[in-house]
Image 1: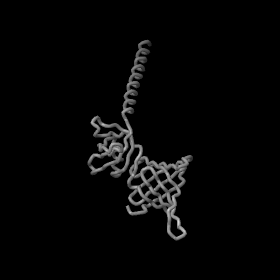
Image 2: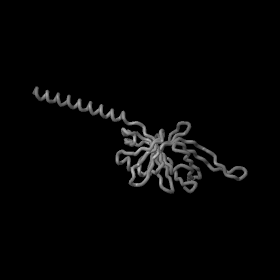
Image 3: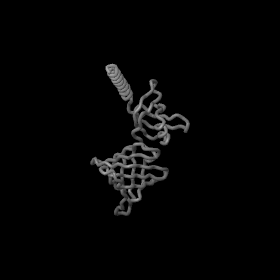
Image 4: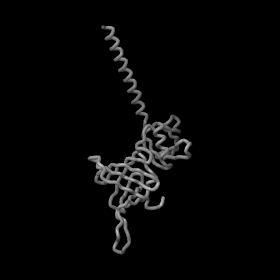
Length: 207
């Protein structure tokens, strides 16, 4: 009985030591990860992906998990990406461990909805909404009704989660689906999660 207890005690002790070592190594791995922000550069379908780092403008090769690399290939050259990763010792390559945010060149500019509202994606984080109105002299003017901050996070190819907030702090959540000629936004109530608005958008000008 005593031998069995000794064996059990040694097994538990050994397991705890293994877990402690694993935890130290895991935390060390996390400590090495750092924010990675830049613009994607794609040359050819078989060429390595590259990233132009926002801070230094240095170009580095991108490595990472197959699902991350596959997703990046669904984006366009010049799209902005933000995530976490580790640089190689020589600084010529970055290994992406996560992809947290994207900015799409394709959506920049003005889009018109079926309600005639104009959605202007000014840059990768600002969205302005305008309504066309007729002035006294008969000319048409655009009146800005909303200015929103937005964030796109990756879901799957051409599908994104979108988070929008206004100056009062009101937040709207939803999904954005994109193709060559059309954009669909499905917005939900942040409290209930129920869909409360669907917006179809078309480029105001030929892209």
